[in-house]
Image (tube, rainbow, N blue to C red; front, side, top):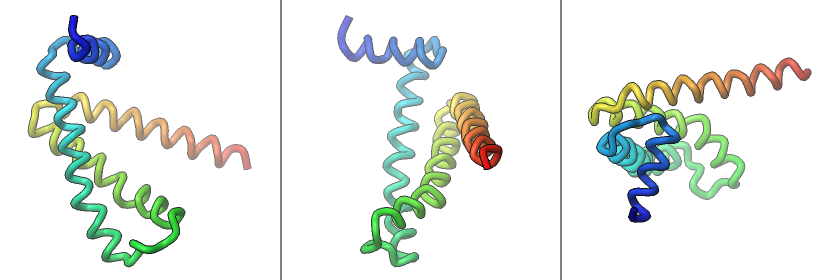
Length: 109
């Protein structure tokens, strides 16, 4: 078995996907969302005039604005390529994880 097939089989097992085509489409969605976010980040940073700002400021802006846009791109491209359910399930899981982090932090105070 080639390295590529081992790679695909590993993801099929990890994500509980039966079809090789579905795995390929999911990877394409990740690629399209990643490329698309490049077109969002630059204008957002320009509008907010933070291109030459400290890394911490850029990171906070990225997490507050650009990261949620990436999640939306995943859902849009996932829907267009027939993988919406996969990405919606991942988004719900991510949301529960973020909520659990926030609730742990607030309960520690």
